[in-house]
Length: 181
Image (tube, rainbow, N blue to C red; front, side):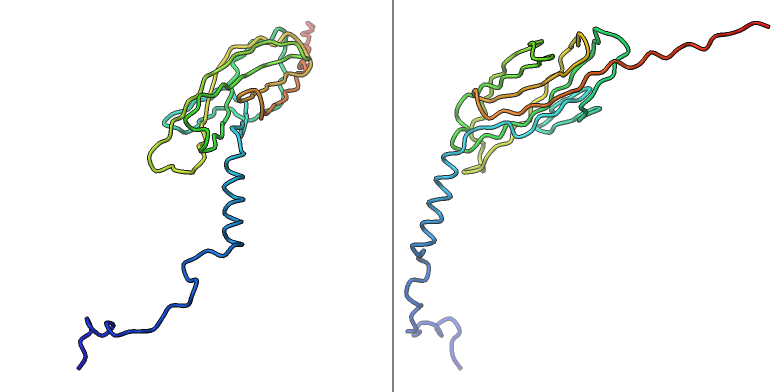
């Protein structure tokens, strides 16, 4: 009877040469992937409009979201505009401070513009991973008339997104006339 613990002590078989080592092609592919990761910069991943937008515990919540036209009865049309955007930060940029710029235009005339500063840090367990940071803003706006409203969001001066909203006045409904007999 053989001892199972010592049975492999005399095993003189060799492993195939090169096992556990990467081939030059594999190293080149890994190097290209690493370079691609390092050359990526922060970008606006998505941009949405809503009646209301909110971020709670890292999750985006929308009420009445993702529309592209407004038909008010009169102008100026006052409304609350929820703006939701997601900023994708590559790992190499997670320790940097970033600037997100939001601009709202009506027929190429600036209505609103503001900036928000963003710093993520590097959370434990995220080594090498991008971070998707949801952001939400709710701003009162007064649309002066028919035309095109354009929402723009840009991070660090580049890599932005835009969302266009068509504004058309709703036709006035005529009141039925009451005739007496």
